[in-house]
Image 1: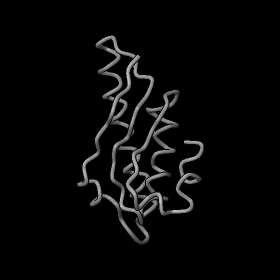
Image 2 (image 1 turned 135 degrees about the vertical axis):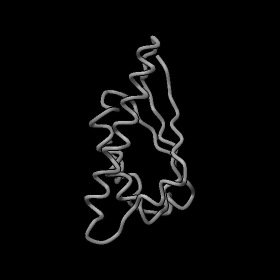
Image 3 (image 1 turned 30 degrees about the horizontal axis):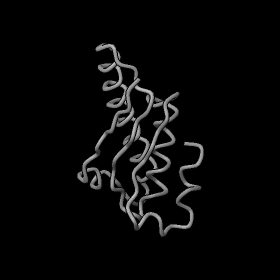
Length: 106
């Protein structure tokens, strides 16, 4: 089995919307990421690999942690279901007292 690291570039920062569109935008973002991850995992499977573990390497802005955690939860229920999932953090994330709780269950 394989461990895969998926680097999500900082350009994703532009995808976060504020205001009334935030929930719809987050749902669309999760759906797009889920589709891309599903395609990646299917390619690996066709090549004979079995992905057991995925690390999502994204330097999420600290103010978006709760929303990113919700996206990660959707991914673990979708394309990443049944796999161990890790998320990267930066020192600013660890200052958030709710950091661990945000990702618990994902």
